[in-house]
Amino acid sequence: QVQLVQSGAEVKKPGASVKVSCKASGYTFTSYEINWVRQATGQGLEWMGWMNPNSGNTGYAQKFQGRVTMTRNTSISTAYMELTSLRSEDTAVYYCASKNLGLGDAFDIWGQGTMVTVSS
Amino acid sequence: SYELTQPPSVSVSPGQTARITCSGDALPKQYAYWYQQKPGQAPVVVIYKDSERPSGIPERFSGSSSGTTVTLTISGVQAEDEAEYHCQSADSSGTYWVFGGGTKLTVL
Image (cartoon, rainbow over all chains, first blue to last red; front, side, top):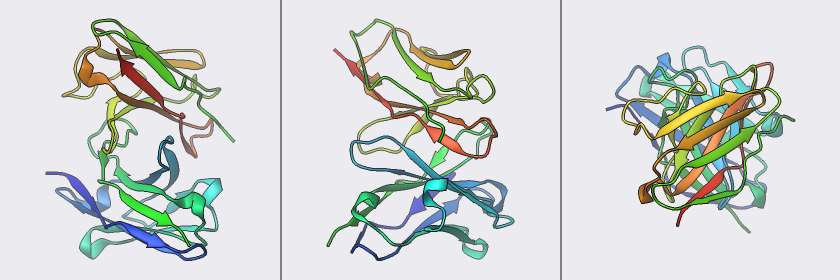
């Protein structure tokens, strides 16, 4: 079945970087855009940016420009999101999501989420 | 920056109708999407393109749009509908995605 499987939880110190992976299966990885969304505990969803897995083109939310990089490795159907200069406010669950089922632009397939904790 | 505004919470009794609104200046131009999220789980799309319902989503879920406000309606609310609901749309240029702050639906 179509699914996105993310890497495990991370604990980082302030100022460090984190790289989260998102492995796609059950469909052609290069066919559908991947988005990244994060959610701090008890808070709403926050869109971070998108990547076209075929071209590698990206678009980032203004808030994260300069700190986030989205990449992919098509040979292993995996997308990556790297966030640098981490601070405590970056503590959140990070999700990858794909537009896969033809529901307009809906994020219809989500990974299970990766908890990133930033603490000294 | 562009914002979508949702009420923080809505409470209804089982069998009643719940309405959750989402307001934003670009909503007349851009489609809205609604997601249901239960604790510890990833979001699930329940309405796409303002009013379309994915297969597998119960008919009691519906969406509508009027001007700068979109509304998610859940008719005959059931206990299993208790969750956080998030609206999503794009800015007026279609460049950026934005989510509302989320609405906690409590079934009394």
